[in-house]
Image 1: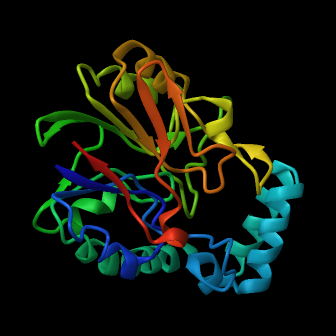
Image 2 (image 1 turned 60 degrees about the vertical axis):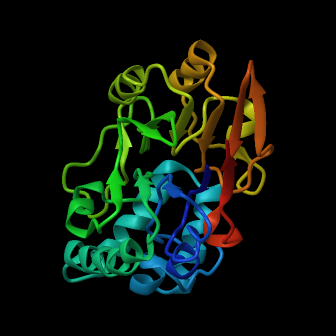
Length: 262
């Protein structure tokens, strides 16, 4: 078997259309949408709606500002639009209409934090399996899938938010992880909580990682633990017992899938 794995597509539909070439199956670990493009500030949904200068200002605040400063800046941007929710919905749907048909190989997909999974069934194409929270057999191996990211402890989602990332409470996320048993491969959007896997060397901060994923790796000892989310990790891989933990790469930029063979 040859399986290609990608994560953090962030709008790169052209590369996604080639990602399954030569593979028996394609696995997509989320973040299909290009919401805020930190490499090209004029691209992505934010760039389209507010322009490159505002995206640059947001990127600086994310590196150097406080949560309250970031929140105030984002609220001012939304207030500049007549109907921000409709504008975001249109932009999200436009990207999904291009991205979903690009998954041409038999595909197993989960959402990341930069996704709107409630819309996914509308865009599902033939050969696409939506497997978030499921255990699925591929080529004789049992793959366990869990998507999304973690809501920071103590944070309360805003009920009327224009855009809400796909973030789960720790209880809900851990409950989904607990259902993945007797697996050979663990597939998630965020990494297990191993320091060198969750530290981003460009943003210079720890990104989201899951202790429950790490506990599952230690107890189940799957062959592989595959994930994305951290675009520039301190380490792309680590071994936990018999398990090879691997960041499959920032696909938007690399355009190269990670290859599993067995």
